[in-house]
Image (cartoon, rainbow, N blue to C red; front, side, top):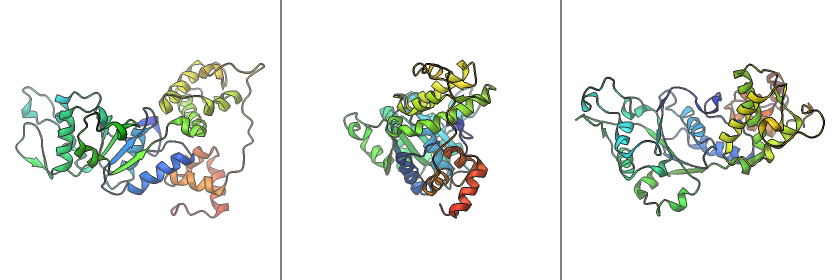
Length: 322
């Protein structure tokens, strides 16, 4: 699948998940340290933690950012079709083919390929991917001319892949080629405070989509977000907020709307507007996360743009150096 723009969570700039917890800041630092290199990256984490969004972060901050971002699924692409998905079939290889199917050679030669669920890739698919990584040139089905790849590979797999890849019969050469840099993405339950900025982000997004611009979480609903289990991680939180915005009949999204319980006795209340003072460290972390984008950093911190600009001036922060 060829992506021409940011996909996951509709976040701008691409690859930014609105989180400010220490575990996620560590993940961002790791990604940003290797983004401008050519090394392959293996992202390990549970389903729904935002692995595709993080892969887009790598792509957007690399020299290949002007090229395409191609997503291949080791789970959904049958082994016999993986070669065509990876390289793109030559039109002459298929009798009556009406169009040329874009593959790695048609665009991602200068871009990034994300292989999702690489641990579910068939044996044939593993071998073909290994060939592509190891060889100095690739050859499409139906063609005689070899082409030189300049592609960068990012792969994703479950959190226990490092422990079970040998037992699962995964090609050892492919594992070592993909795991030059291994980055472990923590589940949402391990960074529970991130549920609040994520929830607010999704609320704002879906409120705009459904024309309910004045919606906000009730005090009880907001307090419940970091305490919920979220076994489906960010995907589950996103779906819950989507449903809650649709179900909400007033100006507040309540515990009932989120399916997290029943509002306390009495009328649901909006959260109090008071908040602790924003520290210099928090401002710098938000600016690093958003690559210096003041608007998005303000969203992460829960302040307006003008307030953040005043804080940047007050703390003497140079946005180019954070």
